[in-house]
Length: 380
Image (spheres, rainbow, N blue to C red):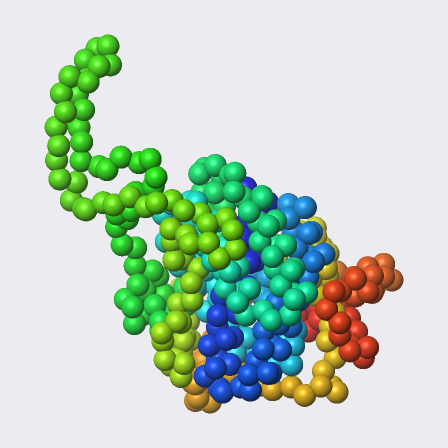
């Protein structure tokens, strides 16, 4: 099931990115026309038709953290909006912690489906371009066709893969801290689950059976909690009502000017000793890195050249002081690691990217060209 996890992870992270950007665009009073262009351009790149077909048709293993972050860095800069390095780090931290919390709260594995569809519904509400909307609707249909008939065990395996991916990531988020669902060390509070899946009997009954298996006596007891059954509505159509609100914006109703992320991550004393080992393991396999970059190239087929375009800077921090504090607290000395070097200078990769550009459904300026090599040089 690890090879069926990527679409779920990608679309949920994408949905959370749209929530955060929408909140900050409103908080900074960005012109509505510019804000709409940003949202449409990012969704257009995120749901590139060829890329979506690729991740559903070819079951890819889940990306390493580094490659996935590079991908969303590219997505965030697919329009006229610009984020500095600290704001991009903050954006990605907010995305990962929101998805981690929501997947953690999927006590019923089938909620993974509803969670993803809620995010896709929200993305559709941000889109005003008909071509982009069709691509998102296509992704919606691909997702329901591939996941609707999965068993509870298969969906639970996907859930475990996502939670393993987020293991040892503990970032303090002010929204979670205010709602008292997160501890000061960045770990989540897990309340008892009192919602029963469809078909599950309410706890509190003991049956005594004879040698032949017939029930001869039944007694009742109080299980210590009050349980209720959920309707189990997956909502497999666009805009359907679903039995969970996981996937809705956690910022809805919050002050637009309020801080979203506590300054810095958990302290070094609170970090897991497995962190450095986990980071080294992410980048250990050259073969996997090449496969990841092949698919990454299909997503970022256009490297936008914005020298002749009017851009604006979006800051995910409320003040410059908060940004400076975040930068200081995140300077962590990590162990030196071996870097996998991949040659991207051959003409084959350029030819592939040129072909992808010609197939893009959303028109871009002729001055815009792809340059995967530049991106990878920046990410090194």
